[in-house]
Length: 173
Image 1 (cartoon, rainbow, N blue to C red):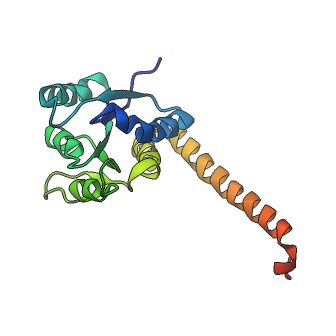
Image 2: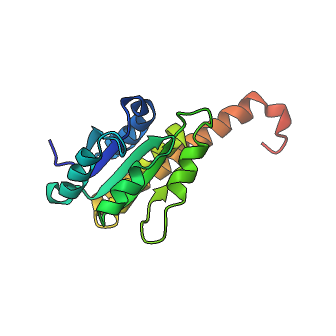
């Protein structure tokens, strides 16, 4: 098994329902990753130790999913110079608004890329991590280009099915 290049952390195991989308994105592109539940508040020493040792283990990008106060991405960013991508988890009655604000309002000097809330944000976090790695990996860049082309083909297929189903509404067919 390949050495993990991306570390996916989440503050609670309940966040995995969302963060699995980051895993799927990375798997689709053949990018190895590590997954860890580690809370910024409940296990700060564990989080700090993991982040500080990550670069030596070959980690190149962090993805952090957290809900509520969502401090995990910021805590990670404070401990490393590696890129950090934050995924706001919609875990409270505010449906992730609190999390997106917490991750998106990092102070100057502590950068964290902030994704959309939930599953779409986690999926995009995996893709962004791959794009970051793809800057120095031609094979991964090719996979990303193919992914985008395949996505465009799917849209065209859906358009063709829709046009076929509603042909009378498309006179210039």
